[in-house]
Image (cartoon, rainbow, N blue to C red; front, top):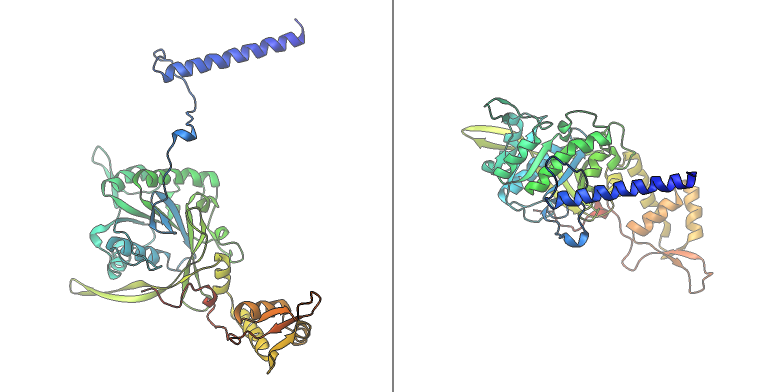
Amino acid sequence: MTAASQWEAQQARERAAIEKGRRRARSAANGHGKSGDHVEGVTLQQGNAMSMKHVEFLWPGYLARGAVHVVAGHSGEGKSTLMSALSAAFTTGGRLPDGSRAPVCNVLIYSGEEGIQDTLLPRLRGMGADMERIFIPKARYDAAGHVTPFDPSTDIELLKLAVAEHEIGMVVLDPVMALMSTGSGNDARDVRHSLRPVQELAETTGASVIGVTHFGKSTKDRTLEARILGSQAWAAVARSCLVVVRESDSERRVLLRVKTNIARRDGGVVFHLAPLSFDWHGETFHTMGVQWGRVLTGVPETIADAIESDAAKDERIEAMRAFVSDLFDGRDEVPSIDVEAQAKACGVSYRGVQRMARDEMGVLIRRGGNDPSAPWVWRIPPTGLRSGSADRLAPFYCSTEEVD
């Protein structure tokens, strides 16, 4: 037998084996397989046989029902307090940070880094939560009646049953790293493996699951997503990723949408942490709460860059603003070539001054006539120069009104 005929014979045997496997699979699928004749395979479903559904939101644009989300930030920046504020709103139908009304639902909170009785519960009660709608996982039990402490890394399947039984609408896992039973939070495969049961919990119960985590060290110069501690899979698996960033020289914070496939990747909200007190059973408790500020719009990285800017950068901005104000000195128009020369003489960035003048002070930078070769000039707008604002977030406010 020639080499060619040998090859043809081998191909024929392989085709016959494939066809035999197909017949066995079809027979098993139709219920005609022989006893003990197990067939392995993959079930495929055609797109035209599947239905679609809309994204259902718990908080429009931020939190979807039946999905996993991540909230990240540096330690001590108020992430857990933020989650308590949202929990209080959802248990009472209160106002959300953007002014919308929260749907009423039960909330489950796993807190692995804070005291339940002396920190979490007073914070929730102080912010007005309906405590009958708050659920805390304390222990797990088995069929033999054995009781052990609840462990999110091993008990998510049992938690799924409890979430469904108590009709939980929002689940907070703080910290989400507690899900790691084995492997490393820095390994994408391990992270995806640990998050899969949580995804199934969200999808099967319809709850919005929020995992709280930290930023890594020395990550300020990275993108906001890349700051999240461990593997980028934490953010990649989540339907949306929110981060908390604090102003460099104040206690003001912003919650930003840095990754989402359920809404626009845009803006966020301002908030402050504030002390509050309340009386309960004849005792006065002191805790921390959240005061919501204005709604923001804009690229998250640009907002973060503005709020994290240092004092030296602010001084440069004020110097450029003063430079632009002094430019005109009674004139309505200044040639661009003169502006560039003066900027060089004063040691300021011409491009920086140009952006400041156009974007924040309203200067009109146009050609001096209809001739395409006419020189460029800077002109004062009809309404006059805008004085600008020392508020770093002023360019990003959606409105001038605070959210109640």
